[in-house]
Image (tube, rainbow, N blue to C red; front, side, top):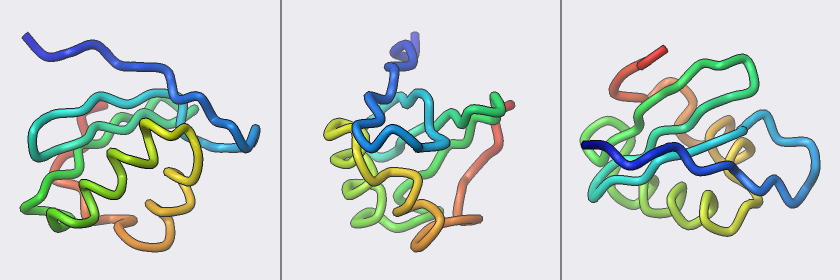
Length: 79
């Protein structure tokens, strides 16, 4: 069973990210429009996924990182 989505803290107050879920080598990111994407080490690169996981835990900078570095490098659009 997959872990549940965790609310993104959005410390900046203006992120498009609302929730995330972490796996061993992947991160799923849900945006305010409801779209949910999975980024994997294979699709976006292991370093990028680890950076995204840290930003998600920190609650700051995840949306900016996605726009600047991984944008369309998701493995799947889940919804």
